[in-house]
Image (tube, rainbow, N blue to C red; front, side, top):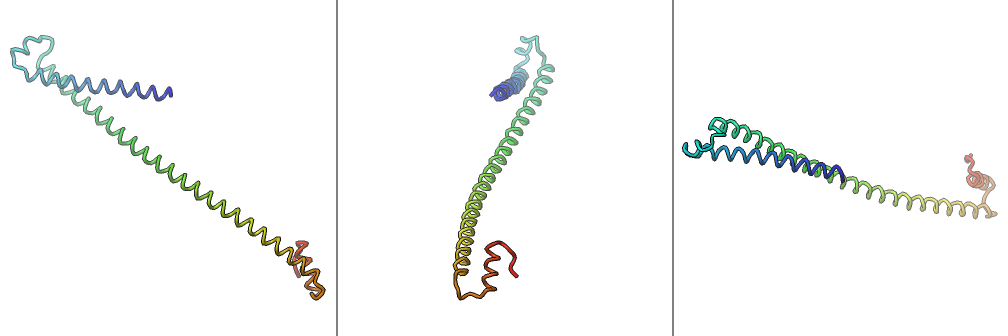
Length: 148
């Protein structure tokens, strides 16, 4: 919050300086447009002073406005990129959650299938009609040994 206040203060000071420069250039232009009789009533300023100071403050003030405009456009572009990046991140998070959910469901199904296969093999072991080699293979699988 403190930095935000400093930024607003800097922007305010910048605006005051730029607009006062543009105001002075307008005042100088008005002075230059006055008839000579009125210009002679203001001895503190001459037409040379008005011309030089008015044109220089007009250049600097309009340059300040151009810089401000450029910075505002850059900020808008940066904000757009930031918002786009945030949206992509949220999409990525949603995709990850969907994939993780599918993975968990698949893992549960595989575990369930393995349990059913184990029960099936144990049932076949109790069948007296199955050959002894098949029973050995089934017992090897159930005890997690490599079949022959």
